[in-house]
Length: 134
Image 1 (cartoon, rainbow, N blue to C red):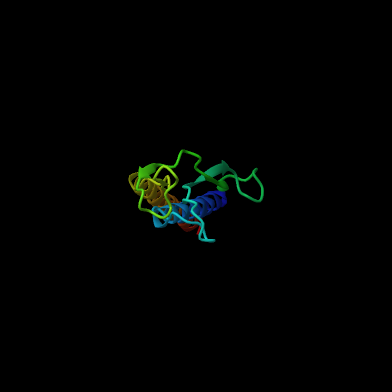
Image 2 (cartoon, one colour):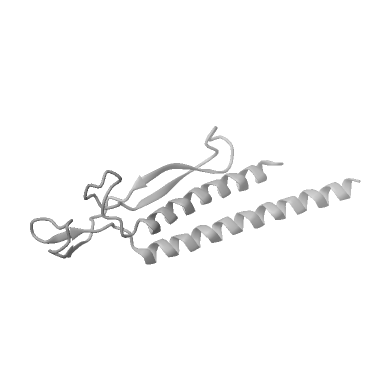
């Protein structure tokens, strides 16, 4: 009976992690160096979902299976004056497309809202059932 609330809660957690990952991509869209200061452009990250609860996949719901790096090629731009340019004068930039990230953020936000609505509806149904029994 309360599995519906567990499903909603797991979906809310998964979408929050997805939104955090997207926010990280947007924040690092122009990051050309790693934390050690070496030229190493940021690689886009994305979330992979899996069915079931993280603790036991027999329970209904969803969980984040992993956060993976996008292995698509890094775009290069000719900028010979840049200190991060290679011998040919090209600079590798992060493979983050802001338009894609904003669409993904909107989708994650809508999915989060849909799960909140589903949980509110289930709560209302539980309350109505209890009123009928009383």
